[in-house]
Amino acid sequence: MLKAYYYLAKPGIIYGNLITAAAGFLLAAKLDVDWWLLLALLGGTTGVIGSACVFNNIMDRDIDSRMARTKKRALASGKISPLAALIYGKILGVAGFLVLAIFTNWLVFGIEFVALIFYVFIYGWAKRTTSFSTLVGTVPGAAPPVAGYCAVTNHLDGGALILFLILVFWQMPHFYGIALYRYKDYKAAKLPVMSVSHGALSTKIQTLGYIVAFLAAIAALKIFGYAGYAYLVVVGLLGLAWLGLGLRDFNSEDDARWGRKIFLFSLIVNVGFSIMIGADALLEKL
Image 1 (cartoon, rainbow, N blue to C red):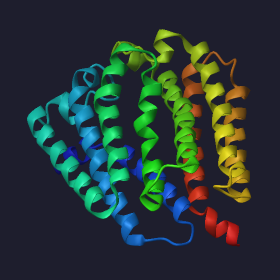
Image 2 (tube, helix red, strand yellow; image 1 turned 90 degrees about the vertical axis):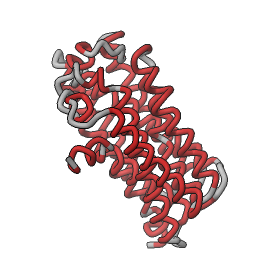
Image 3 (cartoon, one colour; image 1 turned 60 degrees about the vertical axis):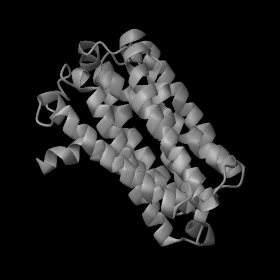
């Protein structure tokens, strides 16, 4: 049963967002790292994201029951009751926000609160009603690195904005790749994702466009002086490889395979980006 509760909080999403939150923190901190503040940020963020994911699972249990990859989730299968999940989600959320309020700052608290509202309610509504739900969902997905950055600076600036845009532009190809790869699941669940509502060709064209936007955004972080040359070279090459991967097989009739490649390589891009901005100050010193 403990394992069911563990997966109810979507640990994969938590870990992925903690990586970007830590990267944003380290980018802002440079070489002057307050490790206790970083620990508080990551602990509080874990609770908030876990809470949002639990609430999302409660709201989406009917959808999950219609999709092959999600029908065995604890709520969809009846292993955990909605009431028990609701209590669990509230505990995670209260604990996470308390840690952020006490040990970080109110800007971080506000960023993560807005992200939770967007993910649970606005994205929860949008995914059932519009093909633009993916774009709506990028708002909470781009919040962790901004929160990490602001935990150090305690204010919003150009660096925070660029980080937000980078993660927005990264998420769109990432999720469009999933929408192509899992097309049959989304169609069975009657969700109007781009691949279902507008077809594979439109989804693939937009995917490449967002990768180009991602390349422009990562360059902006260097152009405006928030990161160094090593970051730009490594992440730029990863971004170009991602674009090249999409262009190479663009005319393939196996859209699911194309989407899966885009999705899997997006994970490499995200990890590489996070490592490079997290280590930027150290690399510049060397």
